[in-house]
Figure (cartoon, rainbow, N blue to C red):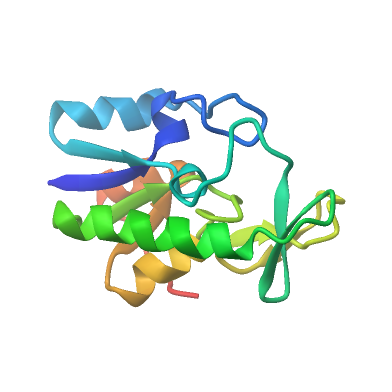
Length: 151
């Protein structure tokens, strides 16, 4: 199976702070699957490192007050194009990310508070029929016990 994956989970230093979110359990999937890395924020034209971004209503704003909505939409569309190009039916995306979070994202106040919502790329993938899970759900998906919800 071809699976589109947040590049940071594979060890790419593309997080907003220049780091990564390497997860060995995701890398292990390479034994049986083809993993297609994407970073929607970089694909949208944002630099690494970059100021943190949170959704404030329909706008993706960084903590310096700059509107990054256009870059987030562009990156989501490009990530979707890549997922479709490789006929990916599953995405493993970074939990809580403003692009990739599939259940919760930060509330827009930069206070660390979470709200039930999905990031821009996760929402777009779901709209186009791509199942989205995050790195904490990989084991349940492999065991066949994961119940997916679409926000």
